[in-house]
Length: 171
Image (cartoon, rainbow, N blue to C red; front, side, top):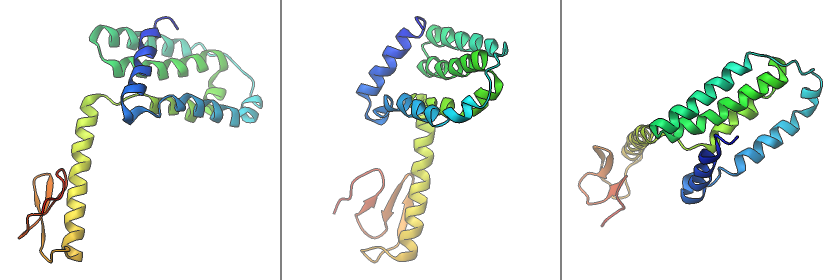
């Protein structure tokens, strides 16, 4: 737990400073609720500790060290999820860990995405949005009765100065 102290502090800082991840503190509470919801199913299966979980614990520790050494916060954060799986498998066994699969995997939603993923995803989503909006505008007609056309990652109403997409509408 001491090894993850800096990671957890940085995670809390991300939750407080980045509005996109302000939901982060709620995720562990949702995970606890999901585990509580599965308590009857967990009680029905006996705990059989599994030494294979030690490999996950070792992998989580290696991820943490590698993340700290390379200053990759995403690697440090995801080591928390791997550690949770490793601890569950080590102390609860495979059958109980299977029942905890969704709650433990849900922990990943408290972590910020790596910047590379965010940049790639946002560009792809922007492209999809522009394609879809120009298709709909062309088929349904624009409010200015002109055809919608695509200009890179922006949609424009051809024959007009209005633009849709990354810039606000200008008249």
